[in-house]
Length: 397
Image (spheres, rainbow, N blue to C red):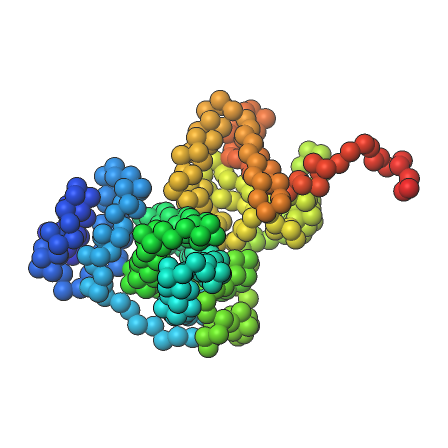
């Protein structure tokens, strides 16, 4: 067995022991005896082997912090020269800004709340901390697709699950603070998880991104990042939205993924590619098409999108476009469509005064062969309030 394979096997066995109840102290000596430094690629490979062997993603996710504690400080971190406005520079400067925020404003506000009845400052900083969703969402929707295309599938699944845990912990902490409840254990756990994710991104994620995202891919990331926004780094040199725009302008626009302008001939009419694109984008709802191989093949790019969609998802497995906690529902819908048990499924969400209707339809040809599934998402608050009638013959009153 090669040294590389042996190291991977040892790391996998260590993770197994942790999953079976061993403590960090129990495995630290074994880890240090084998690894002078561990490569992020080896961590990714070990997690992938565990999932392949049948271990649920949620189980690895639950022990993610224990795994991280074992390798923290022992991961071979790659130094990268910062480039003004480059998405990678912005992403890691956000972590620097987040740590500064946690050590400064956040720490002072929390201490004040725990020592008195004044919760105003702590509520304010917790609301600001919720901006971490922008950082995580860019990672999940722009970085992870490229990792998956490079065969790196386990770390994105595990990390996305941890991101969702952190989001919920921040929301729970905010609810407690707004109610004046001093839940020190919850606050400490939340902060620990946030700091832990900073370490995971800095030591484990960075080399995976460098290995799997090309210069052309980074242009796409920069072009699409505005949909999610930025957090904690606007005052750090080289990391403002204007820095991103300047970098992108200097690099040039990303190459289009369009395959040309051939006419589309249909039994009831025809389009050229330009007309078809404009028509689909003019329809007042979002359309996403997943083909029979369960890969995202198309989405519309209308002016008023309900949910962000980025071109990085083209070719992405649909199961990788959703957080782990909702995978079972996605799998169930697709299986029912493929089997013919169902032809459609509807869901709706009420959020921030909006009423969002999400509809899924099986796409079949004239012979009934399953071709894929189309998701149609529409914000229908205005439609729900309609009364009476308005026709083409109606006159304005």
